[in-house]
Amino acid sequence: MSARLPGAGSLALLFHGTAYAFTAFREGDTAGGERATIGTHFAQGEAFAAHYAEAVGRRRDAGAPGVLICLARMDNPYRESCARRFAALDRWTRQTLSQAGHDGIITERLLDEDSVWVVFDPRRAVPIARYEIGADALPGTARGGYLDEINAPQLIEMIARREALTWLPGGRERLDAALLEAGIERQAAAMGMRAPNCPTP
Image 1 (cartoon, rainbow, N blue to C red):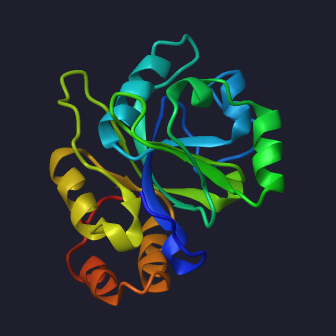
Image 2 (cartoon, rainbow, N blue to C red; image 1 turned 90 degrees about the vertical axis):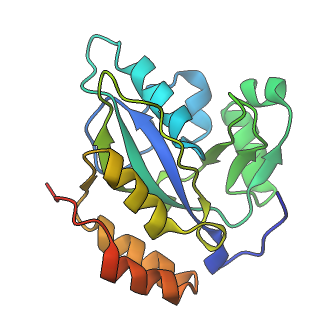
């Protein structure tokens, strides 16, 4: 992964596996234990997020496992390539990295050959759509990333053909605005013309 300049190119489409109902990320709202104190975790690959959601869904207080499709902003992430170091990260690491000007962490395909993205400030990430994982569902193959490196409308359309995708309130508009901010006017126009007409709760 190459270094990126801060700004519009820092917006990414990522996946968050969960078995709890919410529409916004908040500091401390996590099912991930101590390591989650470093920030809000996302998967670049849909399959890894679904796997995590199914694991969380086995807890007594959990609801139906599902995957949130999210927008996140990271201008200057720290790149971590060692799985052992990533597993040892804690809130002190976050403080040190924040003081050095980093606003998150991106691992280089560590877990199940997937990349984990951690956003330090939960206000810099927002869920835009969600789907529940069926008992017999096949693992999804969609991969997110920075908006200028993927085709977000096409990716969401692919997921909507396979899953009962629901837009969260304002989600479709947020994605359209993010595509425009990232300078991807052609994708933003495609979003308006052929985005899946998913229900909104």
